[in-house]
Image 1 (cartoon, one colour):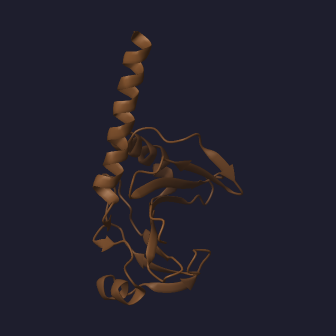
Image 2 (cartoon, rainbow, N blue to C red):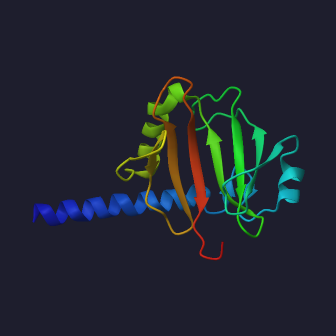
Length: 161
């Protein structure tokens, strides 16, 4: 009986965590809706830099952004907007100071529930949360803290992209 009650509790907690990701990110991130074109993005967030990238659309747009994230200060940080094959925003990365890694992971854990088992790939550790219906979040952190990089990634979950 305890096992069934615990399983129901865990299911309820994980379901609410998934809903939380969609509640916050299903429409987009910080005023930038998913599937926005580069021209529309530049009109909303002028002054950025446009680069080639490994995104499906092979380019990204990066802007300075130091707005706090979950109460975490982000001085001199950036946001990256990555584009899909149709040249519309499909993922957004928010830079966070590396020394705030544990604080970011804790805030996300409290807001969205547990992440999957971390995985190491190359020079980074990836902390991914299970996808919700419309959005998925993850954190990418340098393995080496010297000159460390820390990013919160938000991706649209959409089979049309």
